[in-house]
Image 1 (cartoon, rainbow, N blue to C red):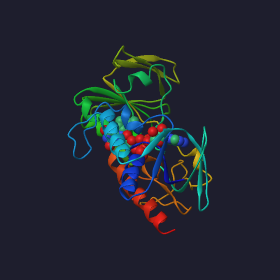
Image 2 (cartoon, helix red, strand yellow; image 1 turned 60 degrees about the vertical axis):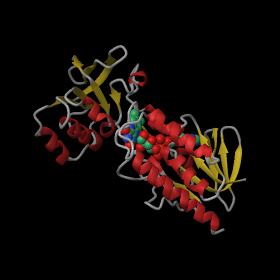
Image 3 (cartoon, rainbow, N blue to C red; image 1 turned 90 degrees about the vertical axis):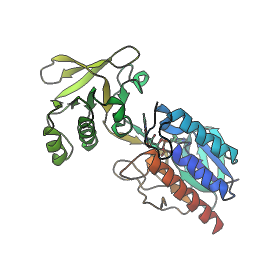
Image 4 (cartoon, protein in one colour; image 1 turned 45 degrees about the horizontal axis):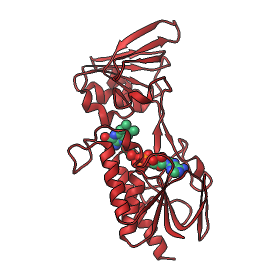
Length: 301
Ligand SMILES: Cc1cc2nc3c(=O)[nH]c(=O)nc-3n(C[C@H](O)[C@H](O)[C@H](O)COP(=O)(O)OP(=O)(O)OC[C@H]3O[C@@H](n4cnc5c(N)ncnc54)[C@H](O)[C@@H]3O)c2cc1C
């Protein structure tokens, strides 16, 4: 039996592992697909303190190396259920594991548009994070897809840096805050492409533009672009834990800064938790808090 099982080998889960291992606990990390988490998709990270610039892959490799050199075991397995109790059982697609404490660090995914070639253009013009990647498009022409607060905030952020920003929304009104819309409407370099959906992504190795279709008129139009920022929502990866952890209306684990859930010994960390900023810094902060909380819980048994 392990002391702690961590679900998800992203920055939050691996940081929790580092803290727990350094406190003398045994740790098994279960990861369903992406060793290092979603940051591996990022060609360049430039906002993590201590590194002026590092690729997402290198950042992830460093974390994995640090955790495994301290003794973390990392296995490829998808967790489908947790059974609570003094001894917790973690059930995966391939087996069952027992432990004293569980940290859920399952992250969230940016919802994708589902267009052909979208995945291969990630990092080559298509981005899901304006805060992360906006600086790479300084002085360029970009578009934002979406109509909620995140899309409006991204468009405002990009309009400060880019030469031209189009915001593409499938309805005639935005879902986001009126105050944000007013700020955006006051910008001289923003075009509003309403009632419209993106039909296709153009470009060979790099995005060069998109085709949008007006849903009311049926008219199609090509927009030459350097970058497309997709802000059509996030999907937390919490479905397997819904019976154990309270989820908020958007599906995030409803836990505060202490990362504690309603079940003693089960903690949540990182992007899967309710919070306002989802970045590496906040994920690793949670990882430290949850790792030490799990250690304290085990020591108190
Ligand atoms: C393209 C891109 C660029 C980004 N750039 C930056 C940047 O420049 N700076 C920055 O600060 N942030 C950036 N981010 C955001 C950053 O990557 C996240 O905030 C961070 O990775 C969150 O860490 P996490 O550990 O909470 O979750 P994740 O990184 O999402 O890791 C969660 C892991 O859990 C696994 N998992 C989920 N469910 C299960 C399950 N049931 N069983 C087993 N494993 C499971 C997932 O496969 C995943 O590997 C970027 C994100 C993207 C997508």
